[in-house]
Image (tube, rainbow, N blue to C red):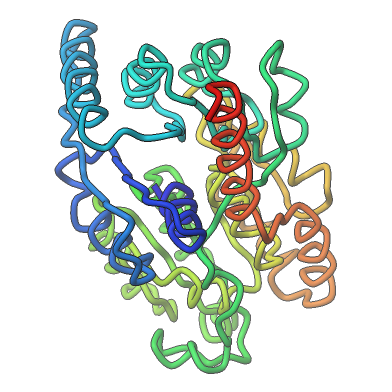
Length: 360
C-alpha cells in the first residue's frame, strides 16, 4: 500500500489523476486508514478506496473474489478510463490488470522483492513493462521490458531528528536503542524471542538499553507485560504510522525482510539483524541476503533463531557505535531516494508510448 500511495501522490504532483485500490482485511482497517491519512499530500486528484477482502477458505472462494474484482474493474474503466493500470503485487492485482489488458489499456507491474512474486511472475508476460526495486530482479524477467526504479517509501522516512523525537517515546537520545519490527501484522516468532531475551539482560543492559518494539495487533499487551516485569526500558505499540520517528531513535534494528522494510532501512542507513519470514516462496530470504552481501546486516533463519544466538548479536552490535555506523553506511548504498519519481516517470513514458502507438 505504501509504495502505491507514494506513486499516486507523485503522479498527482505531475498533474495526473490517480485512482488507488488496496486490499483490506477487517483487522487491518485502522492501520490502513492511518497510513492513508499520513500519506495524504492534499492533492484532490488521488482517489483512495479499500477493497474488502475475505479470508479465502479454498480455491473457489478466491475465484469468486477475483470475479468480483474483474466486474468492479470493468465498471471502473467505463467511467474512469485510465491510460495506464499498474499492479503492485498480490493476487488482487491479477483480475484488475487482466481486465485492463482486455481493454487494451497500458499495463505495468511494480515488483517490490528481489524474487518476483507468483502473481507478478504470471502477469509479467501480459504487461507492457515491469518496474523493479532491485537490479538483480531484471535477470529473471524474460521478454518484457523492465526498468530499475527502486522501492518507493514515505518522504518523511530518514528525515526525523533523534533528539526531537526521543521525548515522544520517553527515551534518552544518548542511550543505545534497539528497534524491533515485525511488519504491519507483527511477527510472533520475533516477539517471543525478544520476551525471552528480556529475562536474560544484565542489570546494566536493562538500565542502559532502550527497546522500541512494534509488535503487531496480537502481542502488544503480552510484550508490554514481559518488559515491565523485567524492568526493561521500553516503548511498545501494536503499530506505528510515524516510522520516521522510530528509525530516528534506532541504533540497531531487528526485523523481518519485507521489501518496504529493506528500503526504509537503506534510506535511514540503519544496520539490521534480519529474521526473514520463512514462507511465501522464500522471497524475504532473498531480500535479506542482498543486505547481508552489502555488509549492512546479519541474517538469521527463523529455524535457527534462538534467544541466546540473537542476544549474542545484539551484544556485539548495539554497544559498538562505530560498527553500527559502518554497517549503516553499507546498507545505505542500497537506497534509491527518488524511487517514486522513477516509477512515475516510467508510467508517464508508457502513457506516451501507448498514445503514439494509437496515433494520438
